[in-house]
Amino acid sequence: MTDDMRTPILPGKGASDYERYLRTDELLELQKPAEEMLHPDELTFQVTHQASELLMKGAAWELDRARHCILEGDYKNAARLLRRANKMLVHPLRMLALLETITPYEYHVIRAGLGHGSGLDSPGFLALLHIAPRLGEAFFEQVKKAGLTLENLYRRHREFFELHEIAEELLDYDENIQLFRYGHLKLAQRIIGGGVVGTMGTPVEVLKQRMEFPLYRALWDVRNEITTHVNAENATGHGGVY
Ligand code: HEM
Image 1 (cartoon, helix red, strand yellow):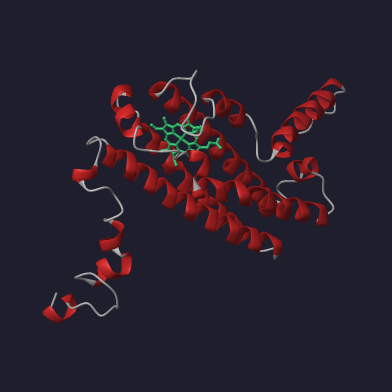
Image 2: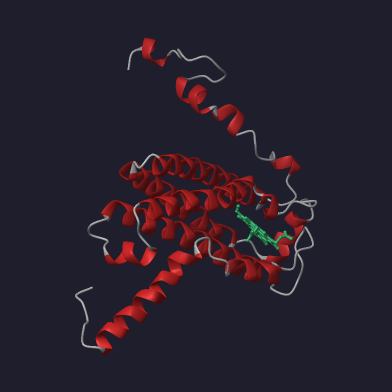
């Protein structure tokens, strides 16, 4: 690399174009300095939350792009973007395990500095919940336009391959949200306990109830319908190859 190549050409703060483009100066100042921390584990607590917020923001962005693609009938790109969003969402779930390494007593030292701070106000998670029904509407509209019921789509999945792919990616999305909620409930139970209230006064028990709400109930229910059909077809000796 010549000296010339090391000279930044992008505008902004930072010694190199890498730091300028990614705005690492600002990014790395977003955590409490050591002297303000209530406990050294606070850095892990902050970066885990911040990294999750970034990935949830990224996922919600891709989900909205996918929604536009679905509305335009561009199912190939919709499936690609949904796949990307789903891959992003795997990480907030995995990162919860990092916080399981904080001991309950030490967590309470950090918690004392959280004020009314609560995951209920997570912009990333709220964005994911906000986009979900609008994304579902776009998909179900296309199923209807194709003159199909959901059961038809699953029965004729080879013929409507791309729309079926979208259905499965939406189911993955729903499952990822449920898995996050389950993992997060287990984290809350092991750190603060399942029988207490959170920093916003919400009982941990409520997290359990939320976990059981699917985003796209129809996509889960259609499995029951399929099994009932197959059982009925088998009973009459008209079982198919599905
Ligand atoms: C030590 C770790 C954690 C504990 C003890 C904990 C505890 C809680 C509790 C008790 C609630 C219920 C609301 C309230 O605060 O009163 C809640 C909600 C929530 N938390 Fe956490 N949390 C932790 C880490 C995280 C992390 C890393 C994230 C990732 C962004 C997160 C995201 C959320 C979300 C999205 C909600 C709303 C849940 C929903 O709508 O189902 N939490 N958390």
